[in-house]
Image 1 (cartoon, rainbow, N blue to C red):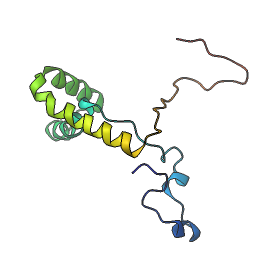
Image 2 (cartoon, rainbow, N blue to C red):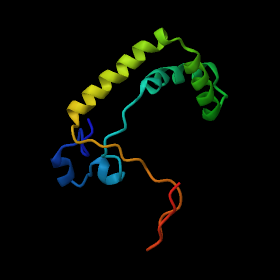
Image 3 (cartoon, one colour):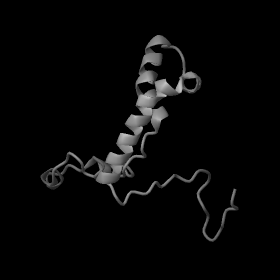
Length: 117
């Protein structure tokens, strides 16, 4: 569910409690779709953490990337299909969804235009 107050009733707000979107701005938006790598990495990351408890996330991420690249196309196929199913379901659930990427860098000053990269 991607609604801002998913799982929270309106009467909770009248009793002095707020929905999570009020407490955490930006939480109520729909999340980006997972590609095949992300679908695969979701479970694989948990396994790697269990095997390498002292390793930091950046190194785990590099290991995940190398492992993904070494997989055969036939091994990647179930994850590609799952990502496509998720994409189709997301399109049905949120037909007006448009990916909005966060801008990186310093905030804009009034009247100042940043050069294009």
